[in-house]
Length: 129
Image (tube, rainbow, N blue to C red; front, side):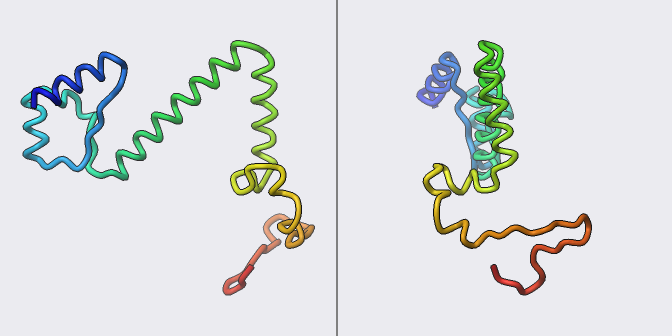
C-alpha cells in the first residue's frame, strides 16, 4: 500500500494521473482509506470506460495544442484550414492514408451518380456492393 501511495504521489507531482479500473467495492474502499485514490475521477468500472476516458483526454489535449499552434503563426492557421477543408471533401481519408493508395483499383468501382434530394437511393435491402 505504501508503494502505491508513493507511486501515485510521485506521478501526480510530475503531472501524471494514475487511473484505475475493475475495482471491487472492497478494494475501492481500501484505496480511499489509504488515500491512494483521492478522487472519483481516477477510476471507472470497465476497461472500455477507461479507454474512452483516456481517448477523450487525448482529444482534448490535441485540440488545445492545435488552438495554441494556430495562434502562434498565420501559417499554422492556413494549414489547419486547408486540412479541415480536405477532411470535409475526401471520402476515403481514413481508409487511404497516402496519396499513392488512391491511385488505381478503387476508382474503377466508382462512378458518377446524379443525386436528387429525398429521392436518390444509394443501395436497397439485400443489395451487396
